[in-house]
Image (cartoon, rainbow, N blue to C red; front, side, top):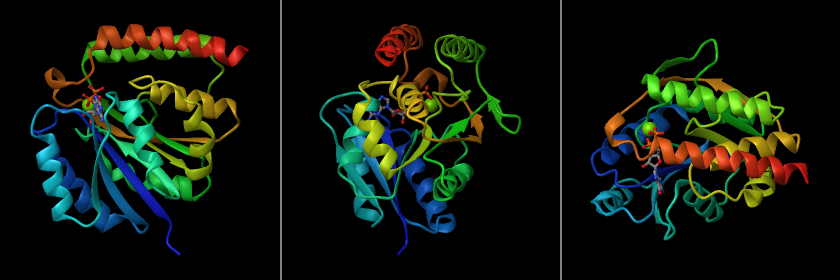
Length: 237
Ligand SMILES: Nc1nc2c(ncn2[C@@H]2O[C@H](COP(=O)(O)OP(=O)(O)O)[C@@H](O)[C@H]2O)c(=O)[nH]1
Ligand SMILES: [Mg+2]
């Protein structure tokens, strides 16, 4: 039997891009993915036309689902929506398609070959990354702090491009606590600590719609910092 893949697309007020992104993703998956796949748009509380557009996309394509999660936050949306699907490979990708989706196939294949988690990495030798200086500095400082606090081989945590096998998801996602942006980091650090193996996939990454980003960099960075310290204490116990 073919393996099943679910790809979550977390969205919040994405009326401007969601339709194009879903069409692009659908076309890619149809032509490149041999698994039994499904794309799930996961919305919480968008106040624009995201919900309406998503429902139309769901009607248009049989492999597209739409779910609404009440409580806000990207981490919570991913954790909760994964619970509703039975699959062999669970994954997600940011809706602005900042990560070149041509690497999605490798993201799934690496799990099929035995990795427990695969994650896009913007800083590998073969990666290409175009981003603003502010975001680059924030990202590198964050990495530097992680390296001081944790013994880790991972060198990019926050890339919204990840896949995880069923067992690892059942073991690790259930012990993650963050509901927002720290979820990505928490997932990787906890899995690595439990001995799961993590494949880092070089990606081409282009920062999209900088002004429209849903991340407020300063509060999110402070929050990540507090969360890193909390996680360190939690793990040390
Ligand atoms: N479900 C859900 N998705 C969210 C939420 N906040 C942001 N997102 C989505 O998370 C993804 C990443 O956001 P983005 O603004 O591209 O982050 P950036 O690339 O780091 O600037 C996008 O697909 C957003 O629509 C939220 O509260 N809930
Ligand atoms: Mg983005």
